Amino acid sequence: MPLKIFCRVLGLFLCSNALIVCFASHSIRTVIVTTLACSLLLQLAYFVSVLFLIWRSGCDSRAGQRAEHFGRCKEVGYQGPDYDEVRNESSEVPQLVPMGGIPLLR
Image 1 (spheres, helix red, strand yellow):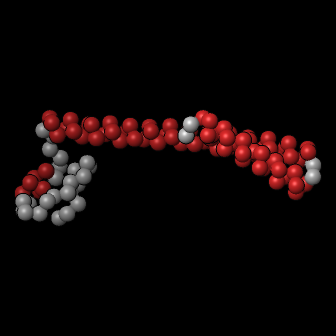
Image 2 (cartoon, one colour):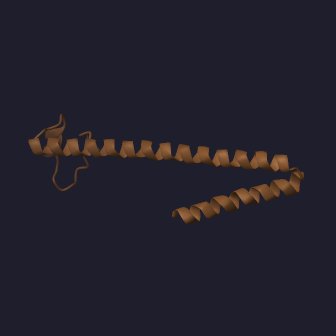
Image 3 (cartoon, helix red, strand yellow):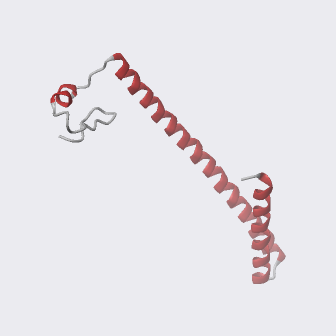
């Protein structure tokens, strides 16, 4: 989202909040306090969402590293403990073997 649109939406939200509180309470002090509280709440939500995105990207990169490691194991010729069982079964049925090396269909 472009910064210009973000600032407009943020300003619209805070102004509408201030107007609603002003009509409900008729107190400038309450308007200021609730507007500041809403802006702090929005900043907290933004901070938490950034932390979540950082955490999720870390999980994605770890999953990518595991997949890369699994690809290297196949290149080297690593054979898991169930390699013979999967190889000796019928070739008509496709075998589903996830990254862990445990066959799903038997």
